[in-house]
Length: 102
Image (cartoon, rainbow, N blue to C red; front, side, top):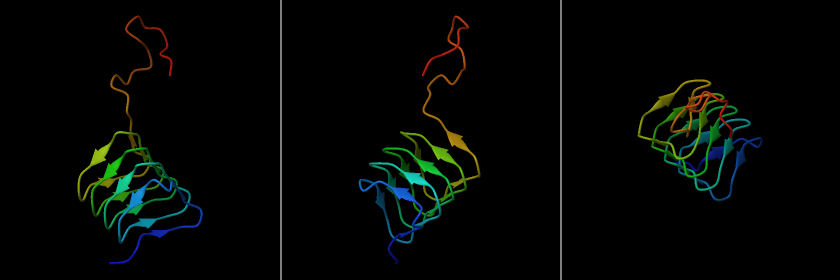
């Protein structure tokens, strides 16, 4: 087993846990309390949100976004530009058809 390898341009919060054999490429952001198990690859520009859990041997491709509280099991592949949002009702408008706020 090899310690996690993290590119100099990666933004990894000190409160994130990255297990062995994990590779973090250029420009991703891994937030506080994220847990990345062994053997993962986090691609260029990916976002791993606070409290997100990534199982072992996962690949998160370039520019993928994992918003909290995403939990992904072992061996899952997430392609480029995929977004896992945390909006329970992912619509641009509310029930009255007005534009939703934040």
